[in-house]
Image 1 (cartoon, rainbow, N blue to C red):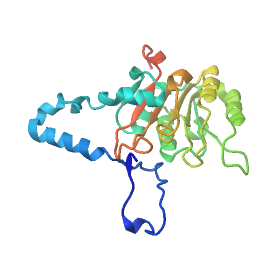
Image 2 (image 1 turned 180 degrees about the horizontal axis):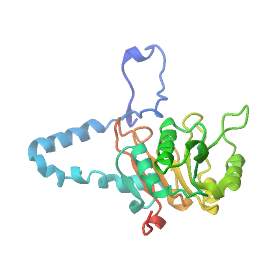
Image 3 (image 1 turned 90 degrees about the horizontal axis):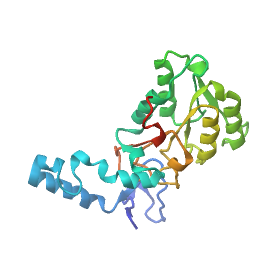
Image 4 (image 1 turned 180 degrees about the vertical axis):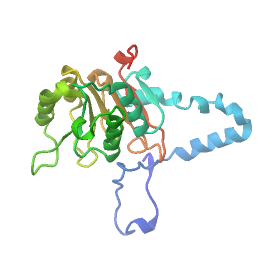
Length: 249
């Protein structure tokens, strides 16, 4: 196997087989990590500040060393992807660019049970622009007695409310139910109504095959410590479609 399984006997019954199902919170330690970290510690000890720009993983360019690999994971071009900050910081930065509310188009559509930090981000951005959260944060709920959102209900609310929606922000995979959203359909429907469409891909990247560029997604953010197994505090990822590179947002 590529990963080390937890071996603390106090966490499990030693007589039972154990399968790790907590990758949604923190991925397991890849077996090569210790060797890679030791290489960097040795480099630090031997060459000090020169490590910023030399070696196979120059520290000052550490994000660039894996940008192409990350682009492959999300189905993007290398120049559409950046590795930086944390997921929520990246969402804030992207919404600062894409959320440009007007008197008639000021709503942000998201799941009623989106990850809590996504709710806080949306509330903050709405308040920052001087709008009322109660009027500008549009939540979609599952039907009564159901746990997941029906595709037709998502597309219906976009069609009905789209002229007043500035940004659609959905999960790629809903953290609470595990529902894999129909990213291409949501993106197409939202853009048809003049909305920017973005996704929190924390539970999707490294878990499912993605094609952000081909799907035409406007923007997306994700963390790397879940299904990409980068470790707690691992740097996050961000995507902006190339069609926006020459635009002023």
